[in-house]
Amino acid sequence: MKKRELIIVLCLLVIGAGFYFYQKSTKREELVVYHHKKVIAHIDLSKNARYAYQGDVGTFHLEVKDGRARAYDVDCPNQICVHTGWIKRDDGKSIVCAPNGISVSFETV
Image (cartoon, rainbow, N blue to C red; front, side, top):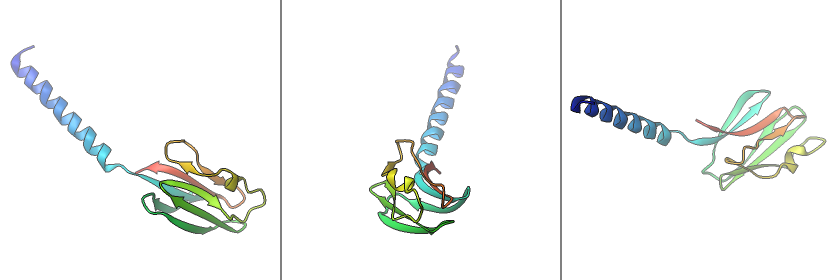
């Protein structure tokens, strides 16, 4: 490999690495709330807060704290969403309240 070709390859590697780290730094995690597959909210994980959403059979309450989320005090018959407990961005879980048609999941944007 000639010196000129080596310089070109190294420049391409540096440009590629810069692009990779730029993309990685601009992406962020957020919590997305859906009602029947339609996005109804994007939630910033850096803020601790409580939210209420109207579902098909009642109110769905969501708490965000320390980058985690949980359903609480939900109007639905079986309470499976409440028993899911806290979910974190790296555990691959989501919250689903089928009677209300609401789901909550972590997404990279």
